[in-house]
Image 1 (spheres, one colour):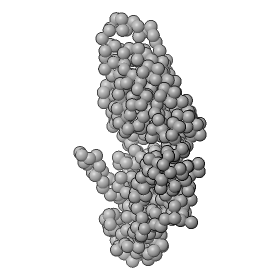
Image 2 (image 1 turned 90 degrees about the horizontal axis):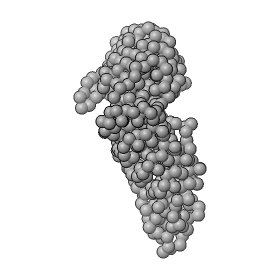
Image 3 (image 1 turned 180 degrees about the horizontal axis):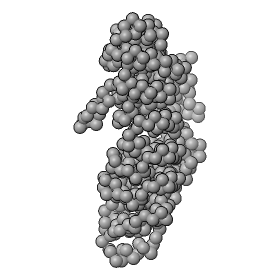
Image 4 (image 1 turned 120 degrees about the vertical axis):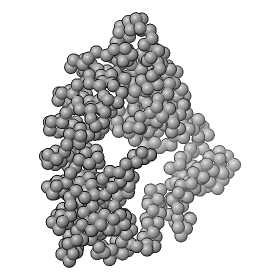
Length: 545
């Protein structure tokens, strides 16, 4: 039975705050908090005036809040509050049709985001909205209503209206129903065809201002909505047949953001993509680590050595994104030049591979005839290749190179650590790079500014590098620019990272043995072996050291 009632207008944020307050009160041995926790958390003690003997987490405190209100879990409790608030919002609408249109189209900060929940709530409460106008009919792929409207007035097929002043085909192509409701898939194609037959233009769209603080306007085209947001093969094909131009900035950039290359293949087969669009798609496939998509583009004839319009070639980008050897080889097999310099900072893919510590890539480039590196790049490459003879001779002949290397030490050490090159990390440290040197970070890999190489190695799941950096004196409890320790990142890597094949408790073990604090680490973490390790390092009072 619930022991607490929800208010008329519950706030999920307020309940999150209450859970934090409960956790802190429990840690402070507050009798009421201990009693509340004991009622629902197994093993919690209720000894007034003494410290609790069971450590609880924020997850436990949220569970207590949920159970006190009669719900089996915090997620169900939170979901109930969200649904209540959406329902109340829908009940208070002054213009349900406009609100439905807004709820059925993407937000400006994430075109492929959002759900249909609020739109469906509006429809259930105001069923007449579904028959309100041609814009709603287009969003719902209601071919019958669309045809009846344009039969009465053909101008409706191209008339702009609704809250965004779009035409019906634009609403259709950016409908969340198109992206999320597969049952309407064929209806969307039929409805779009009806609009196109009545005079709608396949080149339609809407304009967005991007790149603040230096704003510029770009078109968010109908083909982008169909191909890059909804990834709808049938509608993409129809728009191309009717003259859509996919060479906007959005379509070639976003279509490759998947390993399902159906829509990309349709675009390639259409013959409508220009050179810049094809190059963009090739680079984006390296961002997505998709060898089959990369192969498809290369076999279509896309040039892997072209540096326009991004200033780097696909091979440069593949090295920057730590692509697999399979992808690097694919690019080389199709003519990519590892000695070609980019137009951003004049570096070749070989120099980039050296600076990222990619030993196997450097060896492959050498086999394929890449030009030799010179100066500090050659010394960095020797570190990456574990070539001690070259390192010794270079530092003896050109001692100034060591200073040049050390100046870039924070970046080099972090990027060597990020690819697991333990021998290379050792050599950089031997050259004088400080183990505590800071890195500016890399948003692509989720690495924060002011990270040490230990943060990077822990996050990217390279336990051998973690152990080397610990042995060389890296501070184990330093925090990165987001306030995270290496231990927090090592735990996160075990449960929430892309490199699933490397998930292991070994980095966690090494950090704990080196004295890393478990403060702020929630148990359970979601990884049983990690939880066993963490619990060993909790003090007898039940709280983190």
